[in-house]
Length: 575
Image 1 (cartoon, rainbow, N blue to C red):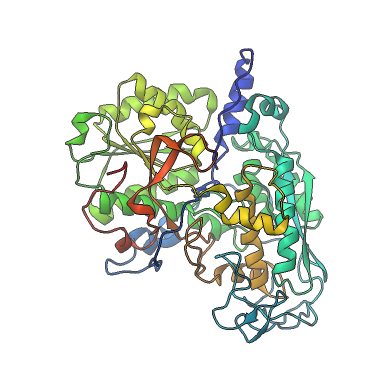
Image 2: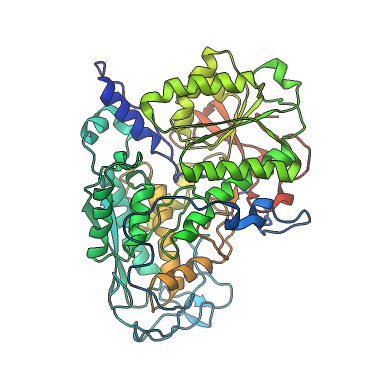
C-alpha cells in the first residue's frame, strides 16, 4: 500500500525509535500490493476488452505450467496444524448443496428470478450494477439456511474478526509518522461502513456479517522477525474462540505467522501477501489474498522482461553508457523463504522462457538496523557485475536506502520493481526513481474510483475515515463475493469453492478479477507504469506520480502472448 512521508519531528529521535518507525513503513505493502497495491494497484480501466485467459499461441508461462510443484514447500506453521479447525464438509458454489448443517439448497447462481435488490436475475447477470467485481446474481433466498453450519456461523450472523495492532512503541511511531501511519480506528470505521451496506446488497441466505475487532497481544512488528510467536498463536486462538468464521485484519497489522496460526485454528484469513501458490495450497482452504500471489507476480516479471526488455538496449537507464548496451539483469529479493522462492521462479522463468540469465542475484534481511549497510553492499555488487537493469522484488522501504546508496556510488541503472501508491514513490531518490518502472499504472481521480462511489452509496455525503479506504473496500468486497457464492451451507470448503467460482470481471480500478482452480487471489492482470517526479498525483494532488506505460493496457499475468509485440521496447517515460 502507498505511504506518505513521515512528519518531521522537532528533535532528533533516538536510534531505537527511528528504527521502529522505519520498520513500520516496511510493512506498508500491498494491498499491499498491488501490487501489488499490491498492492493494491489502482489504475484507469482501458477501453476495449482484454484477453485474460491462461493460454495463448505461445502457451502458458513455464511458471504457470510448473504450478505449485515448482516451488519447494515454504513457511513455518504455528503449533497447531492447518485444517484442524471445524467447518469441513462440502458445499456448492453459487447456491450450495444441502450438507451436514441441514441447509436448504439455494437456487443456482444465474437462475431466473429476482434478487433481494430487485435485479431480474438470469445467466451472466450480476447481483448489482455498482461494482464490476459483483458476483453472479442469485434469486432471493427463502428457506432454511442450516443454522450453525460452521465455526462463527449462526442462522443469522457470520462473525468476522479484526486484530487491532499491539506494539510497545506504536504511540511514538504514530506521533512521528503523522499522516504516513494508517489510522486503525479509521480502517475499522470504513470497513464497518462497507459491511453494513454490503449486508443489504449481497445474498447471504438470511445471515449478515458482523465484524468483531479485538485487541491483539502479539507484537506485529516482532512477528516479522519470527519473535513473540506464542502471543501470535494466542491471538489466532482468540479469533477462533469468538468464534470467528474469517479474519480481515488490515495486512499491516498481520503477519505470515498470524495467518498461518489462523489457518491452524480453523479461521479463514485474507491477509497472505505475495507468497507462492504452494503456500496457499498448504493452508487451504483457509488462506487467500486480494493482492496477486507471488507466483503471478513472478510471471509478470518474466513476461515483461522476456517479451519487452531482454536483448534490447537499456534505453531508460540513467547512465548513458547503459542506454546503448543490451540489458544485463540483476535480481534483489528479501531473504525470507517465501520470497526467495518467488525469486527462484523469476530466475528460472527468465532462463526457460527466453534464455535470459541473471548476472547478479542478491538477497537482503528485513532488518532495519542493517538496511543502510546492506544497501551499500547490494549496489556495489550490482555495479561490479555490470547490471544495467535491476529487478527489485523489494519491500517499500529498502529502496529508499538502496537508491541513496546508488546515488553515492554514481550508479544509475534501469529499475523494474513493485509499485506502491504515489506517496511511496516520493520517498526514494528521485534521480533513481526517474528511471523506475513497476507493476502499477496511473491512479484514477479519487472521486472516480469505485471504492469512493460505493462509499457514497453506503454513507451519502460522508467521507472515508482513512485515506487508504480503497484497501478496506476491496478486502471486504472480496470476502462478500465468496460468501454469496458459497451458498447457505457456509463452511471453509464451500467458501473456497465460492472463491474459485468467481466469474471473470470487466477491467476495473484494480484490473480483472477471475476465479478458477487455485484462484487464491482474484487478481489476474497488471499494468506497467513509469515514475514521473513532476506529474501531479490523482491520489493526493501532490507532485510525483506513477504514469501508465502502453496507454494503460492491462496485461494478464498468465498469458505471455498478451505482452507482445515481442522484442519491442515498452512505451514508457512519455516515449
